[in-house]
Length: 274
Ligand SMILES: [Zn+2]
Ligand SMILES: [Zn+2]
Image (cartoon, rainbow, N blue to C red):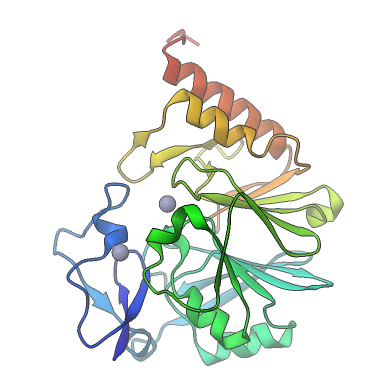
């Protein structure tokens, strides 16, 4: 049997003799199926094609990881390194022995979590490699395509390790979450958001949408609620789901003014000349 990986989104599915007829993540209207139709791959095939894991230092106590050359939707995972252990935040559809050795050398993984199902990838493989639990919001349990005993569901918030908190915000998915790391950015605080708050091209702003690739907005009240879920958290820097998705400083204000801007536009109370 083979744990099939969707070639479009990188979500690894349960072991089956033949691939599933479709990827539920990609047939969901938040995502898309390639014009050529559904395609699947496997870890063995990706390794045979020469893929590796690129690991980059990001800041003190934080490294980034992604499959190289880039595949799927270009997801970038992060590992927060803390005195109590390391947390992997977000994932992509690949793992190899070299990457496991590199992560082992910095203390392994004590926990795994993700912002939302587009970033689940091969998280079960990573969790198994380090015998680490996966923490996911129960609101997105139906989007787990590879159930595993390592997965523990939380309701609204969880603290997988001291100094690291997961907070469910909703919006993009009911369980869309963030990771708050107060010790990050030299103690000014860091928020890891994946697509819960997506960093837009003007990197002093974020957006909150139901679908980013298909440009489907949320309603004003939901956008306000997503923003409210992180109000009061101390953070100066924000990392989204891709290498360049970073708001280096003043991220608390960037989120607040972005939520205000979205709410004004969505409510129709805007002045088009603004
Ligand atoms: Zn997919
Ligand atoms: Zn997404």
